[in-house]
Image 1 (tube, rainbow, N blue to C red):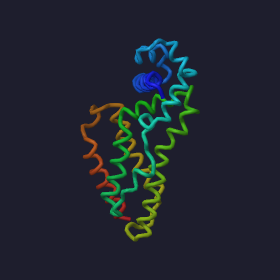
Image 2 (cartoon, one colour):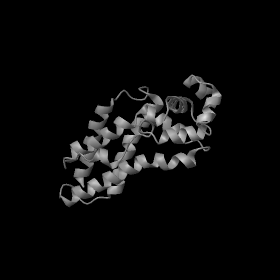
Image 3 (cartoon, rainbow, N blue to C red):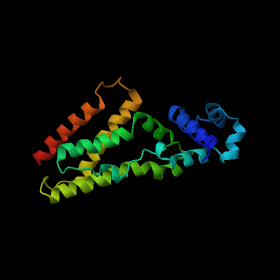
Image 4 (tube, helix red, strand yellow):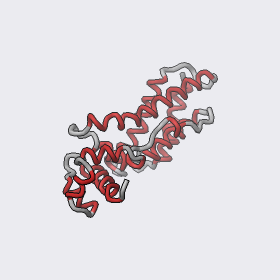
Length: 192
């Protein structure tokens, strides 16, 4: 990809993160990229094409895959902390804002499959982890999908609220949240 195309993609994605898809215009993108608006249409079919090309790039897609959750120790506390930490390190408040911007009705049909990969990778890997922990005799039989959804929802909720309110809602820091949440989850799992 040439430098100009990359500047256009970066400008578009930054603007969508700030303003949303609908409010971002090709004029805005050109201004942010320091290029003439006509250049956008020489490089891309339009705003939607820019976004879909950008979503193919690792820096704009969150890079959540089962591979980032493979460093397990087969101990609940460090493993659940690792799951949450690896997710939160990649799905930052900035990324959440971009993801929200990419859910505009005008583009959501095209962006949804890529966005869906993120929670799907987390949930599927965590469910398989719980099943393996049960097979090893380390946790009782539970509804692992429900348990994984609870942990995912808590993890996503934290980054979503930080994206929405920064520290206005809570001053709890990421690491403090991870450790505290895992401690609470463990108490619930161990009582079963």
